[in-house]
Length: 59
Image 1: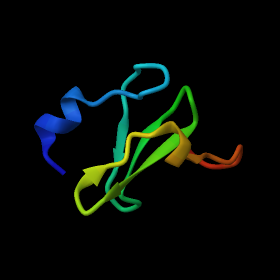
Image 2: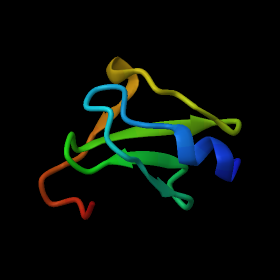
Image 3: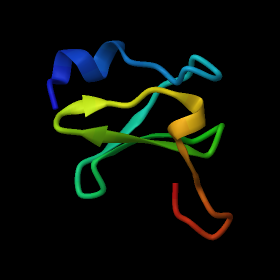
């Protein structure tokens, strides 16, 4: 994933910063507890497509 792109991407819900989880191929928003999948190097930044993080899941 391009580092310059990671610097400008924000959560589409709260406009907060995202954490890149390389192993899971996801961008995670801690406050919203949402994980946005990265498919073929392209982040899917749609709230409806995001995975909700479970309460026990480390953020």
